[in-house]
Length: 197
Image (cartoon, rainbow, N blue to C red):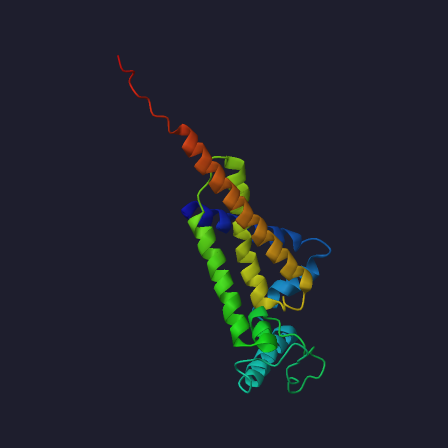
């Protein structure tokens, strides 16, 4: 587990360093402004997203169980009519807004089950390449968590399809490697009985 955390830290550090290097390129101005907007409280985009969340939560207080429905939109954000009222830029809030608390709880339960499944099968299998591939696919879950929190992934159909595909491949590879390990263990059990005279 420590190796996984160290690897994730190295990859994250590498991504930040590569972003810093890219800041010097001619296209780096856009990248620099995106990094600067993380802590900028005056940034219109971040402020708009927070206002969307607040308005959506207020609307959900009136329909906490069933949500607002598939064709729904949250109320307009005070002072800004240009915001897309069909999205919330948070997949958890989006799912709750469209389908209600039951769908949100089912989705959270599914995510927990997937995490639990990944944690139980975190070891490298007897086929080392398959084990590393499986570990790499499991590690994409961190990316999906970030995406679910900052993007309206339910609105972006391709993201949800990709997430489901990666999870399905990871689960299938784990089940294949488990069955391969089990059959290899069964072949290694050989009982040598002494010959009777």
